[in-house]
Amino acid sequence: MDWGMRNRIARMFGERSGHTVMLAVDHGYFMGPTRRLENAGATVAPLLPYADAVALTRGILRTSIPASSTTPIVLRVSGGATILQDDLSHEAITTPMKEALRLNCSAVALSVFVGAAHEHPSLVNLAQLVSEGEDTGMPVMAITAVGKELEKRDARYLALACRVSAELGAHLVKTYYCDDFSKVVEGCPVPLVVAGGPKLDSDRAALELCFNAISQGAKGIDMGRNIWQSDHPIAMMKALRAIVHERATAAEAMDVLTAEKERLGA
Ligand code: R5P
Image 1: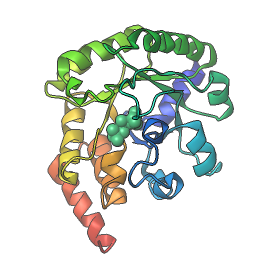
Image 2: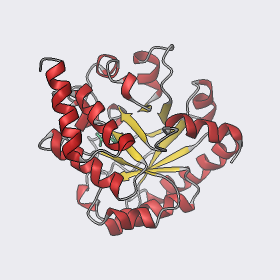
Image 3: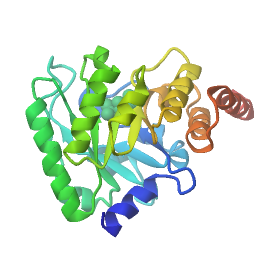
């Protein structure tokens, strides 16, 4: 791996922990103005200081993130389908590599749809993007998307999707947490980060998900709704950071959350 690629990856992963807390705010590219992300700039601004990277599209980057920000950018470069379609897998590369370079991004991210109608083009897109990433020093993160089929989030499926992504050259893989998550980790030779998925019943449940993923080998999280749809997003960021970077348990992270809520008078 050349210096530029290593530097981009190192900027997103804590030097001491080797882990990362990425803030995902790319949902609008297929879901439109998602609840509590209607004004992305207002949602993201108070959270940026606690994020090791922020994952978004070029549109939200240009309109909603100050150019003075030093938070590494993970640029979503695939899209082309919306939740109004049954088949969410019909995506293409929507942002060229040269734009990711011009925007000073630290990584590019695209969805792969293993087992879906458009599995083939999504995997070919990944392979092609990796070749461009190798040429330019840009890490590529594959996202093992499940579309509307949330039940696909099991170890057998995710292990396959993550392994295929790594075999095609992805430098990082974003996937979902599942029972037997260590099997997914075992079969994937590149760092895995986990998404949170739809908002869970409680902040505690999201912290437990994070703890379970990290303790089974995930190198971090790339979480959205369970942070900014929480009533206490900054406290959630701090609590998640305690798990990811300090190896706190879910109970200890709950203490961080509670202390922060009290500090803010919430
Ligand atoms: C899908 O919209 C994106 O890949 C999200 O970035 C990903 O699902 C993480 O966000 P959340 O934690 O809300 O699932």
